[in-house]
Length: 402
Image 1 (cartoon, rainbow, N blue to C red):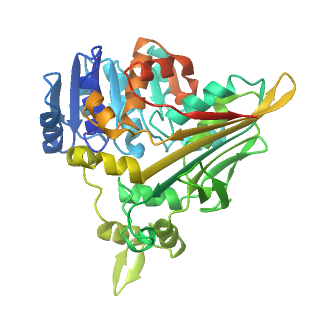
Image 2 (cartoon, rainbow, N blue to C red):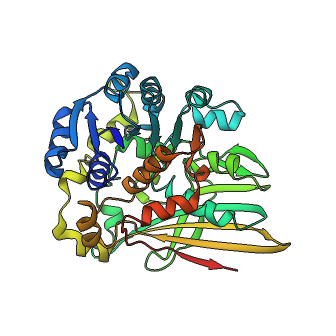
Image 3 (cartoon, rainbow, N blue to C red):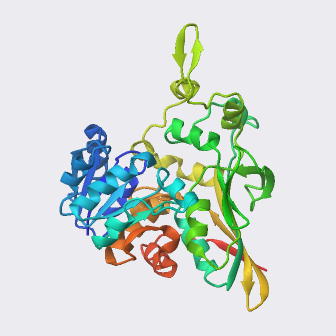
């Protein structure tokens, strides 16, 4: 398999590192608008499979030129650039996969319109797989696997919570907020009105609507969660079928972004300050800690501490019926980067929570999948899990059935 990775940032490095150790991958083209970053990532990995390129992901012709001859294009730039990269992959005759999506697909779901480029990819005999990271992505695949065990689906609720220990008791209030990736996009996700699928139809809700306490497995424990602008409530109801009536995604309420949103500081509408026009969100982004490149900065000496003190918990609650009896599956997916040392020794990085699912999706569509624009829950889940765990990845999730 020959692969082009567009975007050498926080996920591009882990993705290239995993593929460099994949015996089925013969060539990796690592492209970024900043060629220096791509070269640093390639140097750290040290694989002869990797060649670096400079590309502007907003220009489809540049993507097409670099993608000629590859089997799959893995898109790891901002979601709003997706259609540009998709067009480049299509023109080059390559399959395509990304980890997140938004415009124009969100509106197309809610308005019942055909998906952009679906017809073109189908006619070309190619697959464009959207939203195949951790969430959306891995959680969609696992949820679909349990939905397949039911005759009808009443609801699918997805929850994501995080907790850090080991610091001061008020660090989540007084320490600077660092989302770990593009600050503007992370803040916009908190501020944008989310979609909730209720009573069999899409409906827009307000930022931080639907706030409730959710009991995550320990040590994350009970957290406030609320509706959050995310992909799952768009694609999952459209693709899962079985009479589904309700689907949402709720994220834990982090104090910093909640305060910024409530104060109007996540707005991209200009305000006048001492005679100058300023977008509040630009001001916030200017003073927030920069995301950096987690792959280049990854420190193996911190693995033991991170394993013991940084917790991530994803939960999918699926309610439906089997043979006329009501059934509930509660699926708990803990931190996907633990145990750090073991994962690092296997892939050259422990940062696999997003990268390993997208690599798995790339391999799966390269070997054959439904043509056109598809989503993670449309993949064969048993095949996906077999491929992912077949790498030696030491991961387990828990399921409670009632």
